[in-house]
Length: 351
Image (cartoon, rainbow, N blue to C red; front, side):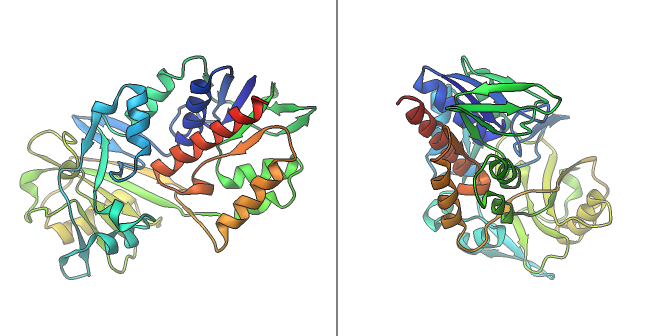
């Protein structure tokens, strides 16, 4: 059985992994970009480990440790060093409890999981992506090949690709953002699927900045802070304190989260952090990541609508949807969603 997975973000890679573990499937992963991982981006520069997207996962969630163990990198998981979050009220930084910090950061998880802190990988979250792409076995990942359509063809699918070629498949996993998947599903004959585009993907910008530690007048307490009434700066993570070996000795790596604005984000971040943290001097360098469509924000009755769409998919050849647009925005939720989609397709194609 040939299965096409559309999207090589973490949900798509998890779906492909699940299918290869079930056996009996020829899996082809199609990715419109020239790299895998989606929002997970890890870079190394001058001894600093920079995360463009998520920098970790909740320690109380089991999905990532389980997957890491299967991939042989379970021992590479690292615990959070610094704990605790502060609130910047415009005048001073004051400690706040885990629940309030999670709410302000948009983390949708039980307090019991949040209280266990975060985990990551020794070489950053990109280590998980690299392990998946390297160990997918018989699965093939092809880049710069975006899915342009879905055409039911008997008991299977014909899949046009940007650039003019096509693939035939017995089943499909759509691990794409909801706005893209909704358009494809509507064209494939799923009524009202375009309404998936109602999921709003909020834009955001992250800026990593490196300073000599002697340039900070104030001692960094905890793992970072959130801003009570944000204008452009929303939060900051003390990346070099949060997880081990994120910056060389004698250096501080900060990661600022900003709302999009007209001014240069690196300059805005530095100016704000200078006031809040008492920084003297310019950063040694900075790295900006733009997310025009970042984390999804669900509207009322989201779960019911997704369940309705999935019910309608049962009338078509084997097809599943997975990703942050449906079942939760965190990395663990995406892995859970992807593996569930892969398991479903394995069941449908085994009949």
